[in-house]
Length: 632
Image (cartoon, rainbow, N blue to C red; front, side, top):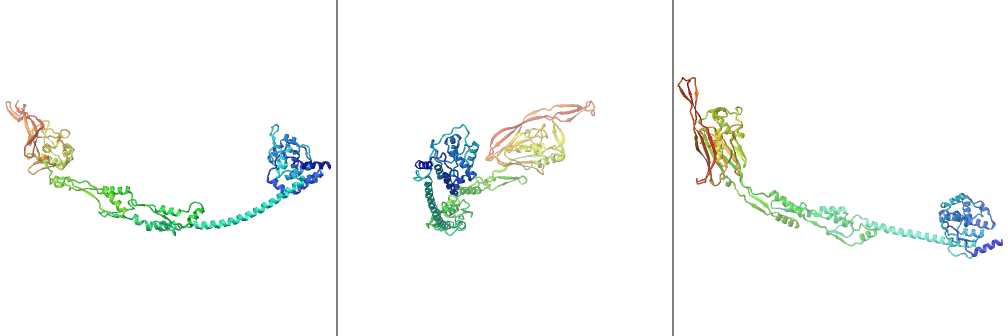
């Protein structure tokens, strides 16, 4: 007993040995400390009496903890087995390196301060597997593998974990006093916490009421008090009502502002690009004070200060106004129209002409300025500036420039009925032909192939230097008459062929032979106006051709002159005739001389003076042999 009292006295003077591991502040430990105050008393009783009955009846969990504490009493075994690391998981203060062995009662007192389960008596060292099971009870980290050295943390005394220095009284008595003080502190904290909760609840109630009031103010659907737009108070309107009011009552006066032109045309500002930002202004005014924190919105809504907004308007779009003026100019601008030839009637030999027309040109810049000025003034009437352009040629001027340019006539009274029929048919086909400037005429293409199916008949014709009968005979007189009229009309002759023999209906050198698939008559309209060909066969069997169009300049005229330039003697041929007696003769065909001729194109002025004389063409006509028959 004396030895035990000495040990207690020594334990009172010296601070309790520091634990090698800090106890974890887990919920399980806190629960154990709160629910087992009797365990401390049992541990104290077990110190004086040795092995207590309470230690024997401890649960499996308590037994595991006691075995663990037994290992803690032997620092050397603790370090060698790696248990020190497991204590580190509880974050207990480190144990000193060397410390004298304390009495069991003193050690249990130190454990009481941590509210640990009572410690069992020293027990034999258990195998590593058992120690690991004990660690498992505390959910400690696994024991390190053998052979690994770990750093030894410094040991701390168990008293260092308490709020003060080592107690003045014995271990058990000092622990109980500190526990009482801790309980009083906890009570004080609980009271303060309850009071705080009541205070917080009251503050929350008042804050909720204030928030409800602020929400009621800022949640109004109308504009905030004192809000005006263009001088109109909108405080009692919702955004939709304000937009509808502006669209129906305010904006029409601006967008329907009209400008009336001098021709009665009416155009509105809306059509010319009127624009207004009233929608964005109203939306912005309504949204003012509806962003930010609740307090900021409340202060804006309840300030009562007037807030005025202005709507910006654009009365027109300059680009649209200019496009409108350009479109109007395109519709009304017109170049002056000169009178011109539109047609010719070959039966009446009359021309038709268009009337001349004045031109107009709108001053677009003046119209743009007038429109924009009127729209800025809210609308009105304006006049346009239109330039009138006079035509260069009027109908009376052009009509005097057109007429029959030239004509040609040949006599067909010696023609047979078939030949005259062919002439009439060809003339009817050509009559009324119009040649545009630069257009070429072809006799064969115009008249076509001369066939019986087309109405042509067999009549006398020249072929290969002799007189024959063939379908379409006699139409060469038509081509010859047309050739002379074309030359006099100053048309360009492209192709012309003389007959093989001389003809009686025209001067030498002035004829023009045609043959389907061979000889053709072609000429081109080189004037700057249309040319019309009119032709007919009169009752006195005269073939008349007239070329109508723009008259030759300065009253000039053209004539064609054929000049015989030489003769070709004919030959006499003799043929036997058994109808004649020996020594008798008769003339079967009279001989006819051949000729050479040159045609000239002569230009005359209005006074009848010759201006020029040009070779038109040259021709050679074969002679006709004289044939005499004689008896054998």
